Image (cartoon, rainbow, N blue to C red):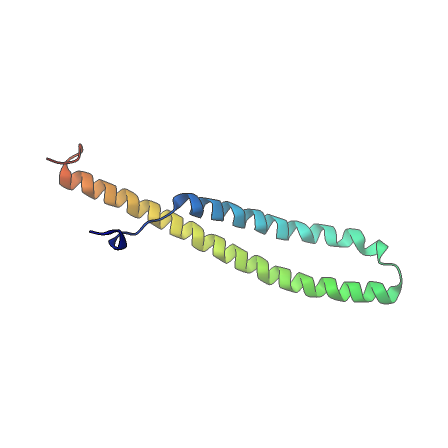
Length: 104
């Protein structure tokens, strides 16, 4: 078997991707808590109205982005668990076939 016949899974990359997506999810959720903090500094009603419109649009896009990040996080987690299980299954099958100490 050559190198092209092998599936290489970077578990470290999957773990760090899972953590990074979790951090992004937290940051997107935390933004909502701070949006009302700046309302008083907008000043004039017409500016405040436009800023409110912008914030509402941003909220919609942020929610959509948050859903996408959550979905991607679930996919990464499922992939990681599946590859870990496959790796363990292959290890156990190899040990069973060759004996615990690696074969003949």
